Image (cartoon, rainbow, N blue to C red; front, side, top):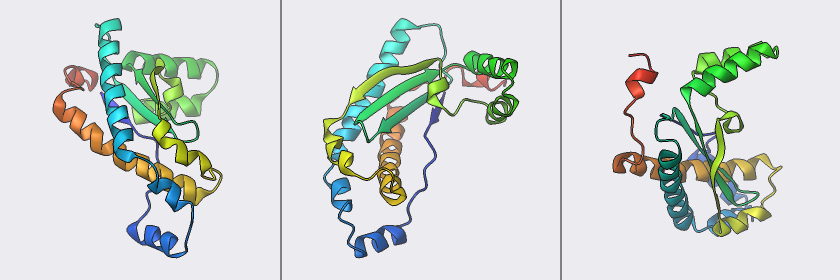
Length: 179
């Protein structure tokens, strides 16, 4: 199983300090979020999504899981993909003439866009604790980058815990990797 995080530009400590020195009021919006509640709700949602997937698709091995939070709508979407579906996507893209896309996915070894996953939006959760982020200017690169940096930091913290707890198992990993 592979866990996909959308690429973001991580802020350095120096950049964060510079922004704070310049008195950016929007930083208060980031501080107003209950990040601990957010992490607990997403961790719980991931556990429920995995349990639900195992119940509904007991014989289908998951190759990739995506955990994506959209601060604009205060929502997290958990999606699953299979290795077989990745191969099917590559074949379909080639048939439609999207050779560059097919080649990129082959080189990566997985789809990096959750919207292309076999089980897109398999499980969703709403986050009222993210309400302050609705006031950010999401067209502003600094504000959007700061928000996504915080999401990535918090997601990586609890994903490690979920792996340690055995929420994710890697039983078929050797088979998927061709070993």
